[in-house]
Image (cartoon, rainbow, N blue to C red; front, side, top):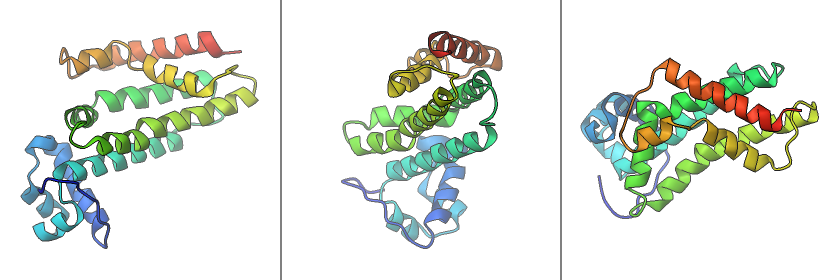
Length: 205
């Protein structure tokens, strides 16, 4: 696809292109995904694909953004707001850990880092639809818990950031430095349980 300053163009088949691209990226990754395969999966011509997304990186980031929003919405739907704080935090932690350790999550992160100089706007857009969205949802939940006298927090944005970082302990550095690229449920549970315990020790009433 073309170089330069790419721009997303929306149209009647935009969602169709996005869904086809998601299937190919999930199966083949960013480097392995070809324009021909994406167009075929989406049921559109290459010309139509180019008209919406002149750059493959831009298409990948649009897929990543929509996937983050989808997972965040799914997490909200599956979490019972009336459950105990520890239960809600545990479910949120599992959602976060599973996403950033997934193959797709790792590819998104590495692409943002690799292309940060050439396409800094992609990283900002991903942050707004990924980490920033999760941060906002955490702040909303914590505010409700404060009103119910279950948490005592003076700086909500800081607390949300701290919880997110607790969920990255050990696993994220190992992933970033290519020490490991897959983790089993036992390894993830250790981080999830530790994150919830540490957070509640600091902020539970």
